[in-house]
Image (tube, one colour):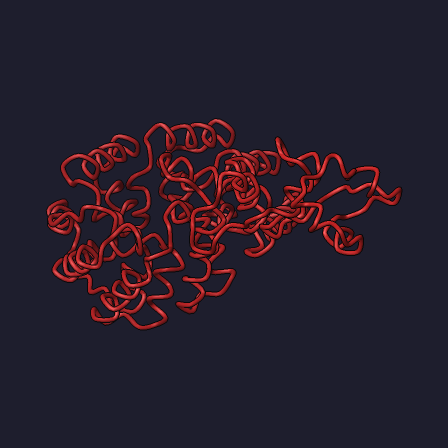
Length: 385
């Protein structure tokens, strides 16, 4: 210690503070060789000597006057209480998502990336994330529910939960006032947690009234809101049911199609819905067949024509089946990924006999889980052999 802090280097006022050797050692962390390696500053943080720039070591360890509680942090100490840099903050958020919400590193990185893209002018912080985790848990959601909700709606962590408590409580009261049970409210928050920040309580009330006026009460068990709460972010069309009825669907069939795909209420009948119907009429060559296919699988509305065409062309080319037969027998085939499911399974079916295997499996060959499909395809190979 004497080698580092000589009497000539130390101001008179500091000499009095350092007169006790024991006191000096209690404030300085010593290297095994006897040299100080870090100091405890007045902020309570352990700082390596190399981090203390432009000040004597003793002045940092024994300031003549520390910061007054409640006052701004003096410029001298700001380097010790700085906020993490953007890259550091992103790493902290991803670590919290992995450790606390049990996400995979890839999922955590995707959540952070999507949140930044959705709100490019908003700063992500660990404090915001923890605030929303605590808020959602307080509404009865499990950690697994919160994890799934943030993967579906990563934009939530771009908003601050601080000061949002009253608005959150009011939004919950609005949902309760419209007859939603506690379980239904949790279901909405599980699938669409950004409802708490995307809508004010008054706008949320207006959306729920609109659903009721359209004949889809929000409180109905397993209704539209519980199935697809993100519909609240869309402009709900008044004439969707009328358009479907006008195209020849019975009213109950039209309502069933909307229940199967609630976002039909967000599509314009004159553009989106008409365009999809015309495409399938052209594809299968019959208006009646097209209407039947769309009634059975309303999720076909909204799919891009180029995507549907690419999948059908691949399967027809590999299996040699007529497009009309393909859509009639397996109208859900275009809802699956061409790269991970439709493609590999189509190639396997071709190796097992092509059209014969397709007819044997019917519409089940894409619905099955991978393990069940492998077992069935192995049985079919033995059967045909």
